[in-house]
Length: 340
Image (cartoon, rainbow, N blue to C red; front, top):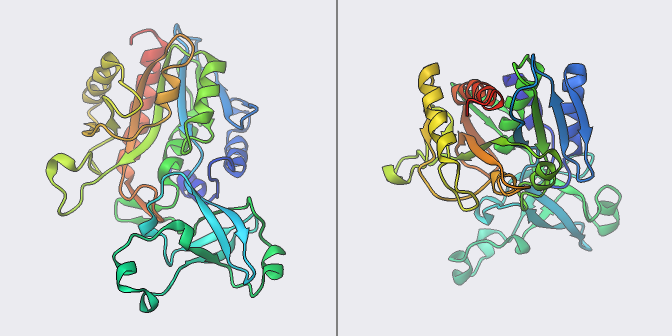
């Protein structure tokens, strides 16, 4: 699974520009399952099991990552941009990015600290005051290779750091890797898997996919904030790397099914794998759209803890990913068989 994750993290694909990620997934799946692409760009996968099952189960992982869209090329050849998804502007200045279809190297540029006035030094950097420098000397030169509407992503290598994995777009290529691994293997019951688009800008893809598939139950497989850092009070750490997948009881979009929440911990105990609650009512994920679709869908969110979400480099624990896959496989089988 680690090689799959590495390959996925190296593919650029912000919200609305997920086609390269989708192509990789379709090629990897091949004849292991039935694939269809809907009008919005979701990859809908039907995986046949050894039997049909009693309940229809939908597993979701979003393909898109946060990033940037080029909005304007100025006379000096610098690129204006807007952020796509929730990015803290404090992490932007000086960062390396890859721009456009040809993945041109660039640097996010701003006024040097030496030229800042006293009041400017105390202000947070606004993305609208920054530009991307691709080394062009004029508008004409830049427009030969970049145009408004082109995407840009962080330029970050995927690396193993002890038992941790560092990479760009771990949110949510980690979830994609888990579900891809599941689809490539054998499953006891039929499953529907959606690799969804545009989660980071409003859960758009999951909404249409859930309406089309009308599942009885769903598991949203995502990443979530791990604040297990020095100086953070224990009650605000949310979840920890190495303590297993995080299960949400509530976030800003969803009040999760209590019986499924309890079942996740019971299942983890039976399997002798670690599992932890997401100890914060914050954020949201595709469950917010899925659980309200049709006449309602009983939904569970299972997330891989990740440090530094929506920044140039995230960190996850390899063991959390492995244990998350085991738990998703067993929970989805229990759902499909009518046990949950």
